[in-house]
Amino acid sequence: MEPDFKEGDQVESQTNTGISRKNPVFPVSIVKPYFHTEEDKFPSRNSSPTPPEIVEVADSPGPVSEIIEARKIRTNGKDQRQYLVRFKNHTADKDK
Image 1 (cartoon, rainbow, N blue to C red):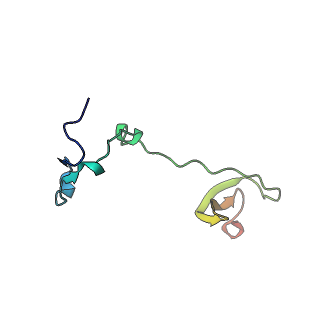
Image 2: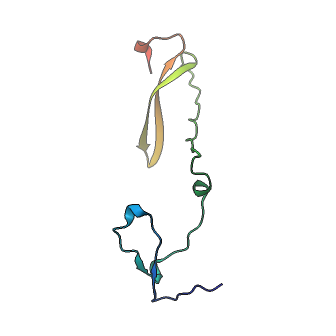
Image 3: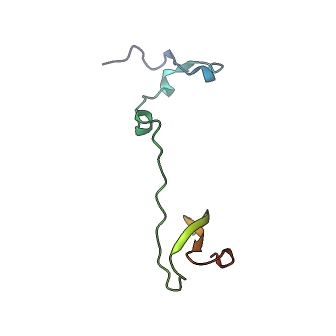
């Protein structure tokens, strides 16, 4: 099915009222087709981040009871996550 317009024509977009102050007329050459994504089909679905990789440490004082803080750092061009944890049966002064 051919569109009713060709390159060089002007088209008008149907936009939300929140951006009504913008000019709704665009050159056809910059208009691109819209493709539905999973987020469009399921807007209330929460995409949860992947769980952290569990690394066994030889000198670990035991199992982790909770993650207190997390941060993301960049090392050698790669993002890494670091976690401050509290081990089971340990107090706050032993957090690592």
